[in-house]
Structure formats: structure tokens, C-alpha cells
Image 1 (cartoon, helix red, strand yellow):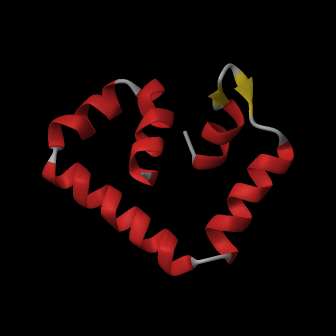
Image 2: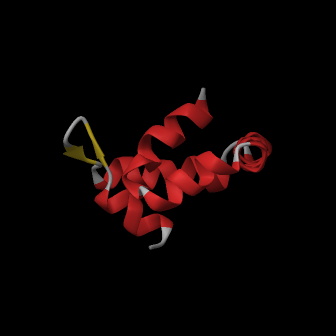
Length: 74
């Protein structure tokens, strides 16, 4: 499943993301603060490399992805 499909199917508090929210996410990801985005992705990867059990859990339970993203953003 690709990122766009995950965003379309994602729910926050039981509500799906609006088209504007999805487009805003991509705008933020691609156009604004690419260094910050790269650092965020790098830090997430480092965390998963340091905690392979959590990566395995996320792969086994993809419904945990939204909460994993929230944790990475903190």
C-alpha cells in the first residue's frame, strides 16, 4: 500500500482526512522545510533500527501507523 492510499484510508478520531488536508500534507512534505522532513524521516528510521521489535510490530499491525507517526512527530 502506498502513502497516498494510506492517507486516503487514514482516520483521525473516526474521521477520514479531507482532500484539503491530504494536499496540505503533500505540500508540507514536498515544498516546505525539506531539511526538517528529511531529519524527521531519518530520526524515524534510526528509531526503528534501534528498536527492530517495534518495526516488526508495526509491519504486523499496520493499523498502528497513525499512532507511530504521531510519536515520530513528537
